[in-house]
Amino acid sequence: MKEKPILAILYDFDSTLAPTDMQAYGFIPKMGMTPAEFWQRTSEFSEKTGCEKILSYLYVMRDVAKERGIKMDRAFLNECGRNISYFPGVATWFSRINQYGEEHNVKVEHYLVSSGNKEIVEGCSIAKEFKQLYGCEYIFDEVTGEAIWPKLAINYTQKTQYFFRISKGITDSGDDNAVNEKTHSRRIPYSNIVYIGDGLTDVPSMILVKNNGGKSIAVYPRGKQEKVQSLVDDGRVNYACPADYSPNRMLEKILRLIVKGVAINSDLSAWENN
Image (cartoon, rainbow, N blue to C red; front, side, top):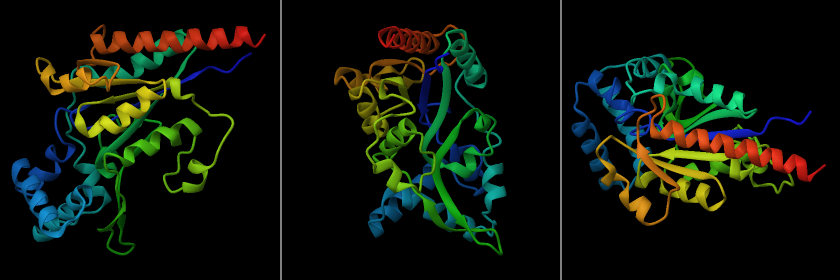
């Protein structure tokens, strides 16, 4: 009996699964700031120091928490993910797509690839749905438990490495040797990878997936298609649709077609090898 083909779905988080940045639901309000104030401070720090933008927001989070006398440990960051809200249908999306895959003899795996805080995502209600969470992480002091230094920072171009890691089945972000070694077989073919994102910060990953035979999907808040129109016009994505994960909406219909395609290609491959 042949193994089930695997379909890997890679997701951005901010403005893809949740309507805005994950920090806006818990962390920023706990600092007594507005999102505009927090991101303005991050931009000013980046401009002043020349620090890369992702590293800048990780620094500013720690700096602001210290000013407020707040212990920014793992438990605090997890708590900041408790009240994240999502686009319609997200809560039941994963189980529905998994079930549809089962009905077509396709194993569906979900991966988060985000420039946001992994520790915040770990506290959110959908964290359990992902086979692997990739996001920015901190090192925590062994004595105090407080965040002291970035352990991992993922910017927009660094997201692309996870396409190769997931294809090869290399889940350890620190395993650079394995991801660069040439292999003759892959756990998941490039053509069985989907990337779902919301805009220009996802472009490198969208192009990489699309150009290697996978499918890239740009999502946008309903009625705001102009946010992703340039991605469609420039041929950077395969599909664009509202960020509505509800049953029988366009996004689910697209994923069903992709699942069917993976199943058909698997059957054809098995037939050709007999």
